[in-house]
Image 1 (cartoon, rainbow, N blue to C red):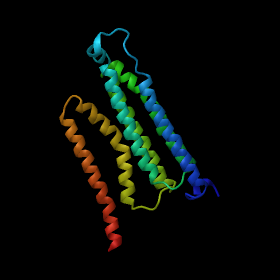
Image 2 (tube, rainbow, N blue to C red; image 1 turned 90 degrees about the vertical axis):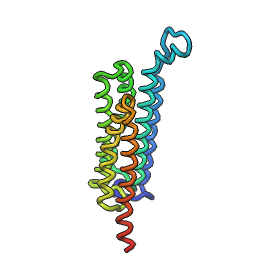
Image 3 (cartoon, rainbow, N blue to C red; image 1 turned 120 degrees about the vertical axis):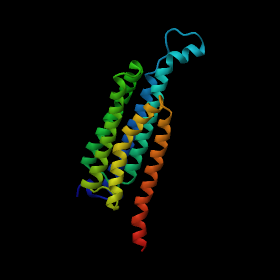
Image 4 (cartoon, helix red, strand yellow; image 1 turned 180 degrees about the horizontal axis):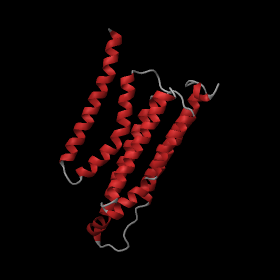
Length: 210
């Protein structure tokens, strides 16, 4: 029997554990590379001038740090629902990790261009990470059957959330840096998705209790 068909106590569980550890390492390295690429200017006079010159770099760093953090959190929540791994999960997960590894490059473009064409490229990159995460969950939940049993509505909700939210939240963050009302939209979106998720989980539980 292949490791993809063994439970948490067998080779399938060990496969999943090693995949999670490897993925966490890639996320950590990507965040580290964000900081390594930041260098002070050659000439500066005082703290105010230093931060004025480094402002775009530091802002891009903060945005990308938050993006990687949100993607890691989403990745962790997805993998917490899995009971085993197989080769198909490896392949789709490597798509996510490959895109995460490119975020330092996207961040460098962001601070060098300071907007312009780099901004839609960066947001598109983050949106593509969401699509790749959706592929991970879609394969695990609907094709590979690598999750614990769950209602179909919950599985589809998770697919929508992991696919759409990264790009949407990144785009709203960029908008919020210019238009403060974007923060209110993001807060409403987070609250709404959280409320909807609880409702979707609660309804099947109530039906089983009845």
